[in-house]
Amino acid sequence: MIMRLVKYYAWFILAIVLLIVFNVLGRYFFDLRFDFAVDVSWQLYGMLIMLGASYSLAKGTHIRTDIYWKRFSDRTKSLIDLGGYCLFFPTFGILTYLAAVDMWKSILIDERSSATMSQLVIWPLKIGITLGLFLLLYQGIVEVRKLWLRL
Image 1 (cartoon, helix red, strand yellow):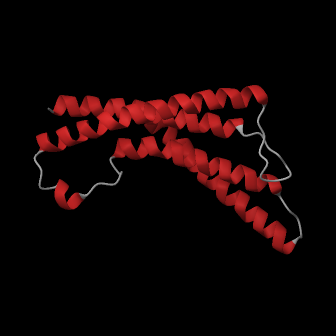
Image 2 (cartoon, helix red, strand yellow):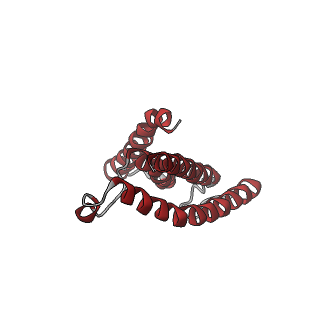
């Protein structure tokens, strides 16, 4: 499921780059300000980070201390990872719950940004963050299943 979403992931990066380029060119060469570009770019950047976290976990590109890691046996590595997931699930479970509650409140009140004069809605960002957290928890379950089967 996560791998299918990766195709659309690159469009977030392209959108951020184009928004920033148009904003800079408009400001410096044409004396035009695009306040919406500032709001939308940081919202897309937030979603990019959250959606990329589950992909990073799926590909195993997260940070490790490889100096010590390569010396351990596969069983020891699996046990260390399982211990890490014992801390991961309660923490990210609570964070996901809080994000979902905040997202729902944001949708109900039609929350808007106060960072710029355009005052764009914030709830799409909160939906993206909550979706990213759900995908991260889902990928964590997949990883624990892999570790369990390896043991």
